[in-house]
Image (cartoon, rainbow, N blue to C red):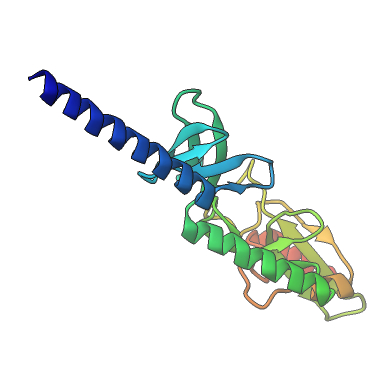
Length: 204
């Protein structure tokens, strides 16, 4: 019996030593350092670690109901990073590409994916604000060019192409009007308030 116990302990010690070696080898192979200086690696069972702490993935949702994925320390509960799911991240990457392309072409707006609306909307580069309407009236003595922004304090998420009642927009130049136009559009070309529209038409 004593001999059997010794044999078992020997097998256990050998197994533990092999596991330790496997973990060491796996750590060397998988070790990376992110832009924040955090050291990432995995053990032989593919458990992930950051700065020596085992981490887990936690799924939550943001205020718009879009899923967020956080990397959290198992012992410390420290949140190492939070991001959207792969599909949403790809939409953000496409938006950033569109933004850089718009800047290179001298445009003032681009199509940006916005989780609040759940879609891409025309977004002004300088302010990051959603444009709900671009209006032009080139009849009469003096042409009119205007833009309207989405106003979250007055509108819900379905109003990304609507103007607020009584809002006469912001006067802009002809050049700005055309530079704000995007290939894909989410804005309207007429203000939603009929009185505002009639007043603009009647200005000339």
